[in-house]
Length: 426
Image (cartoon, rainbow, N blue to C red; front, side, top):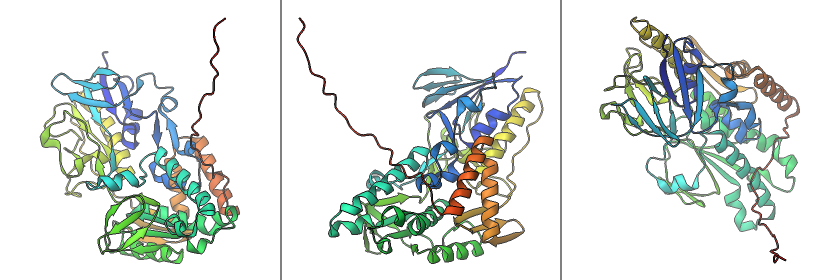
């Protein structure tokens, strides 16, 4: 039996689930990504705040698929698609396909402000999380020797966007400010270290229930986080953050978590492109205007009876779209009708700190210690390997008991020069 060739571009939640669930007897799979590993985005903030190691939430593709002989991995970036000839052009050459699946996800949206983009931090990759960790730790090293007039900008940490990423970051930084950093830097007055959360709407966790909004805001306030709601950032030059109300904040640290926009690939049908750079797909994830190109995960915009404005960009949606498309490829191969996708909302959750979390389920909303335990359990279940589940659990337990972590390494490259003396040949 001749196998059909499926190329998957992107190894996030959607791409990984599709590749793992495709029938290996029917399909050969080529997975293409710019990096060599799958990243567990929900825990990036814990890497950024020195709570877990980056290796615990990063999974090399070649290890994931080491026993899958039908899956090939290529480290490359797609330049464009030639849909008329079923070929993609990449940085390492051309590849042909029977079916192409776009699972390239989203990137940070700076709303056209290149200056903010240039000077602020993002949290969309493991590398971003490491950069934030390095910067924060180096900032406190700099505070020790800084002159009095320079300290204010070093002691202000600003997070823009009060969605789950912004709230979890703010809460985590508030906890290490209280429990960890004063032990490492006893000469610094941490009462002057200010964590500021800037949000354009009236609420934190704006996509969750009213109870979750109020509770998360209450938790953050109790932890000392300063919240500026109904406020927008208009500019940032690396030193001064400008707000739409005319106020300014001196800061050397701005983390931008205020929105996303889809990644793009040239060669896709114009009628498929919709707001936020997402790709419009039908109920079986086929890209509008295409014959054999599909899109899944955050990049896919699918209108359904339950979600007439598209599904939320959540890991659960991506995972289940990947699984559903794997089933549909088999049905298409066998000449059967594909199954329409619909997202079943199982709820949403966010953690603010130790024993502090909010959980929205379809039938109830709750908060506090039990919500925090549920958040930890479900995130552990999503981790790919048993080894990594165990390592993260042990690390969480250690931090919970000791209120400390030993992961505060500044990992930057020192520039060295070679001092090789030239000698004359005899």
